[in-house]
Each structure stands twice: as C-alpha cells, then as structure tokens.
Amino acid sequence: MATVKNRGSAVLMCLVLVMAIATVILAELDLTTAGLRAATQAEKRRIADYAFYGAVAQIVDDYYHDALTLPATRQVALGTASGTVTATDNTTALPRTIAVSGQVSVGGATFNESCVVGARHPPSVFFYALAVSGSLTSDQALETGASQASGDVLCGGSVSLTAVGNMVNGDLQAAGSISATSTTVTGSTLPFATTPAFPTASASAYQAAATAPFTDPSMDGYAFPAGSPYALVYCGADLSIQGTFSGKGTIYVAGNVKVAGDMSYADPSSELVIVAGGNITFSSNVANAVGYLFTPNEVQASGSLRITRGAVAGGSIQWTGTLTVAGDPDVWANEAEGAALKLPGMWP
Image (cartoon, rainbow, N blue to C red):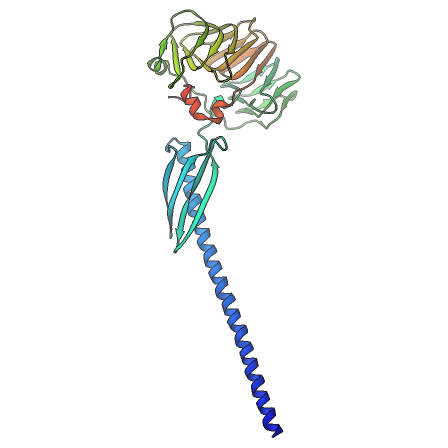
C-alpha cells in the first residue's frame, strides 16, 4: 500500500512539475510575442518618423526657394507610410520658424507627428548691420549693434580693422581674410566664409513701382502715407536729404544721395529705406541718421556718425571718427517686411 501511495505522489509531483514548466513556457511565449509586437510597433514608428521628416525637409527646401506659401498641406508617401502634414507660419511663437504637424499611417498603425523647424530664405545683406561687397579697410573706430546682438558685419572681400577698441556685437564674416586683432567680436569671426551675393537694384523696377515722384533737389523729412503697399518715392536725379521721417516707405534715388543734416524717426514704428544708384555721402555735421541704406557704390562719412536704427550696405565704405551702426533686426525677424519695404534682393 505504501508503494502505491508513493507512486501516486510521484505522479502528482510530475504533473505539477509539467504544469509549472508549461506555465513558464507559455509566459515566455507571451513575453516573446509582446516583444515582437513592441518591435514591430517600434519599426512602424521609425518608418513613420522617416516619412514625416522627409516631408519636413522638402517643406523647408521649397520654402527656401520660394516654392511654398504658408499655410500649406502636403501628402506623405514613403514605402508603406502615407499621411498628410500641414505647415504653418510659427513666427508669432518664434521668429523665422515653421510649425509642421500631421498624421502618418504605417501597416494599420497611425502616428501623430509634429515639429518646429527654422524658416529661412537665402540670407540678405540687410540681415547685417554693416555689409560691403568689396574689402573693408579702416583705421577708424567702429561699433555695430548693442548688447551682443544686431551687429553682424559682412564683407565680400578681406577685412582689416586696426583701430583699438572696435566692437562688433555679433559675427564678423568675410569671404577673404580677417585682420582685426584689436576688435572685440561677441559672436564668431568667420574668415574665408561663404557670403550672400550682394544684390542689385533695378532703376526701372523702382520707377515702375513708384507711388510718388519727387523732383525737388532736397528733402527735409517725409511722411509716408499709412496703408499697404508701403509708399515708394522715386527721385530721378541727385538728392540732398535730412529731417524726420514717419510711416513706412522707400526712397529710390537714381543719382547720388547727400545726407546734409541729422535724420530721425517720428516714432518707433517708422521705417525708411534709401536706395541710391550713385554714392551716399554724409556731411561732417551729421551726427545721427536712420534707415536701411543701400548703394552698389561708395558710402562716405566725413565725421563721427551714428545710425541709431538701421543698416548700411554698400560697395565700399569710408569714414573718419567713429562709425556706429545700431542695426535693425526687423527684416531678419520678418522677411515679408523686407519685401514690403522693397529692399534690394528681397524685392521684386
């Protein structure tokens, strides 16, 4: 009888052991299946991400080349992935950015995707406080920007700044060499760098788009009318200019521009562009001026000069005393403003 009991106990223990092993095997199978499911889901997510960011790259490229107007909707297709994404202007939240969001489906699984990317067109000379298409050589004092911002300097040739105490609040960028050992550069010093092409200004384009002709030889301030598009004043000869400017607008001068007296803005929202076909010259009595100033030729200042808000872009620049250019980041933050102001290279 004891033998039978022992055999029964052994059989029971075997059954318990078999059940325990089966439970372990089933658990391992469940874990394996769950792992496979997770791996499959992760692979689908990876494919969805590739498809989404491929669409984002295309959106950024199209925007850069002016082939995209925001907001825009694009279809996503990459292998087994498909979906739709929408790109919107994110400038209100962060200047010069695009928000992209949408859904991408892969193998029956749908994934929500979103990101914020930089939105940029080809860089403009007006993103810099001071830009020259040739070399920049001076033994006079120079200060650009303020508080380590808005003072980038661009040079299409080589730079040689020898005055002690120069200050560039931003980057110093040149297509050639840079010699500026006594200049403080708060950003990066970038010799032999790729530089934006210096734009041209078509006199015929400005004349055709003009909203007001100006025939007087001198201008003592100007009040641009409110509204859109911004006013464009066309002067077909030389112009002597000074005074207070209000509103937003552009003055194109086919000849030379002489700044005969101080210039100022009537209020913080005013913006002025002066485009000259000839040279831009500042008289020695001029201490302050404003505006985005452009000429493919020479800019000359015969005394210490402060551009209190604005930028200078010229073929070359010469000055005596101290040249201070505060910069104006408005068109960097909002490129549409540069086009509205008809800045060369940003318009037409």
